Length: 131
Image 1 (cartoon, rainbow, N blue to C red):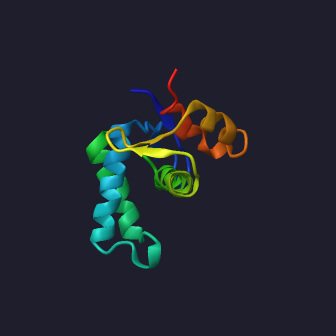
Image 2 (cartoon, rainbow, N blue to C red):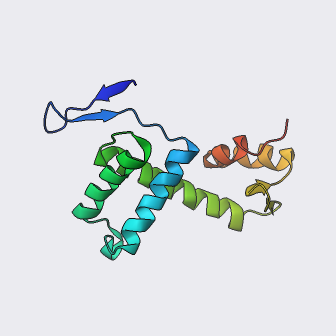
């Protein structure tokens, strides 16, 4: 297994390279939900206990040792992507929703027009664009 060394506080602290495949993202989301349900996210912020649990449980589920920083970066990025996705899904006109695929449904012309204006939509485009 390829590993990257991360010397934040101690030379002994190592972290694996992040692998955010769909399965690992799902595990991370489920672990976050569990910590929220356990009351470890008061006032919208994870507690120290929650972060320790997230790191430990993520490693148990995936076999990957990630630092709090790696997990927090992923969480922050997912929040941004979710905001963009909801903006795209609920605010943009000229598109629909494909319930079976769970994707935005629109024409190639719509993508061509909107990607030129709002490039943050590009990740949703690459998973939906029909060639």
